[in-house]
Every structure is written in C-alpha cells, then in structure tokens.
Image 1 (cartoon, rainbow, N blue to C red):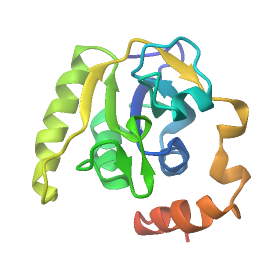
Image 2: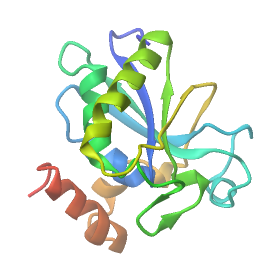
Image 3: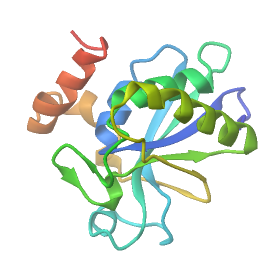
Image 4: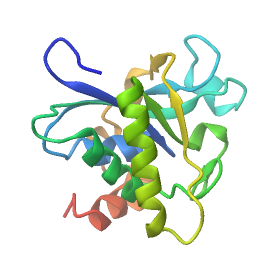
Length: 174
C-alpha cells in the first residue's frame, strides 16, 4: 500500500508493541512507527480493553517505510528475527491473544509476500510458525503514552530487561 508521500505501510504484531516499535524505529528507510491495535472487532478499543482479551485485537505497529530504501520483504525478514513466531498468544512472559504473532496485509501483493516470507523463515525455527496472515480491516492508534515508548522511557524496567537486550541481540543498540 502506497501513501501520498511515496511511502508504504506494513502492519505487524509480535508481542508487546513497545518491543516491535523499538526495533523498527532504528531501521534505515523506516519513516515512522505507530503503535496500535488491529485484528479484532471492537471499534476504537482502549489499552485496557485490548489487555482484557475481549476485543480480539492484537498489539501491532504500523511501519511507514520508503520502499526505495527498504523493501516489504526486508521488513518481514526482520520481523521473524524480532520475535518468536512459534508461540501461540505469547511472547516471553506476555501472555494473551493481544500478544499473538500476526501480519495484517495491505493488498494482495503483501499477502503473497507474507506467505512466501513465512515459508522461507520456517527453516530457521525448530517448531512451526503460528503467525496469522490476514487482511487489515482497521487500525486503531494506541494512546499517546504508548508511542515511542522505549525512546521516552529507556530506564523503565520493561525497557531495561526486555527491549534493550532484544535490540542488542539484533545489533540495533549498543
């Protein structure tokens, strides 16, 4: 999906959106990362509603990127490395449907690319990939305090013990 400024959008969920957001904010060609909710059926959910598990939504990020610098396929390659796509409804200690692994595609070209990428990534894991690949029907931006969370709260416990080690593992933070 192209936007008016020539960028494209990828919508991905791989556990807590703070972790995925922090990863993609450090990637060349990524113009903006917005934390939010998608994949459920409640309009304009709150964080508390999503955490209750009753909305069907996952915590996701929308990644606005320049396809001249980084391709959708490269966005997906990093996605497989940035979380564990073999666990159902969990990432580490974060448990619930809101933490599921999900790719919400914008059009058939992204759907085909996501399926190819998933098939290719399967060889890198000992267990089957359980990532959902579904069309994006709606995206709801998360509350302001969730945006740029790692950047704004680098000393918070979640950032210190979960996000920073993930970034270091991926070679994105010193």
